[in-house]
Length: 262
Ligand SMILES: Nc1nc2c(ncn2[C@@H]2O[C@H](COP(=O)(O)OP(=O)(O)O[C@H]3O[C@H](CO)[C@@H](O)[C@H](O)[C@@H]3O)[C@@H](O)[C@H]2O)c(=O)[nH]1
Image (cartoon, rainbow, N blue to C red; front, side, top):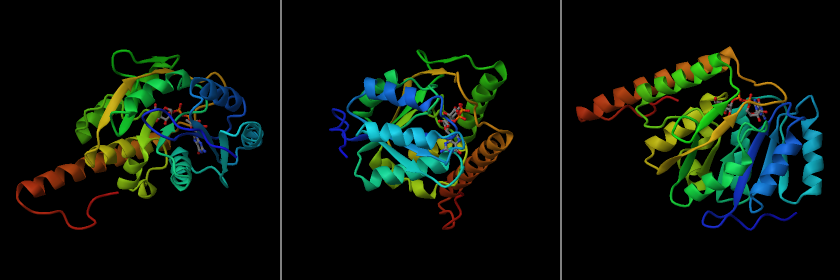
């Protein structure tokens, strides 16, 4: 087993790809990542996919020293898979991690752009909704949900970012340590919002770079009504908690220990 030398100016980078039923996509995406960025490693975090993604991942790992597999017992959501992947990265001494979907929605060819930006900052958010960014082949209802959700998040949390829900990102490892990523409660897509929120609240440097998001050709999205409800509820509570804390500090009072949720 050998590991990549590292990305210039960033260090050893691990691209974490969570998978659930991505048998038709996993070969292609890992090949594209390896071609675009030969200096980075890949970890496939598979939740025991019934379609055999885990077996294909093992084959890829056997054939390439820069691909690793984390087999998990069962489907626990994208957030849980990322947390396990980040813990694996920390254990192996990586300097930075990248989040990437398995289905080709996030173009590996744009990875150098994210990593170049990470040289001068602590976290990079790939953003669909700034000039240069775009979304391809999404149905109108999904686009409206995403745009509307991001407007709500900006208003509720006061974060300046245009795309707090996106899943193509890079974090330096000390950020994940400082924000206690292992205690992140979100399991679905609000995981992305919670990570951005914690990073922002902790005062880390964050940059947005434009990305092109292309809807998957194979397999299905795991988006569900429950995932959407989780996001809405959590963002509302975080926003109210932040306002309460701001109010208390204005009157010279500190919030009760443990009063911040989650
Ligand atoms: N291990 C594991 N992986 C999962 C699970 N659920 C989803 N994944 C993996 O997570 C990635 C994204 O899942 P999709 O279901 O394809 O996501 P999406 O609906 O296209 O959502 C994307 O856009 C959202 C914002 O609009 C993002 O919030 C989200 O992170 C993702 O990038 C894929 O690689 C998928 O296999 C799970 O329970 N377990």
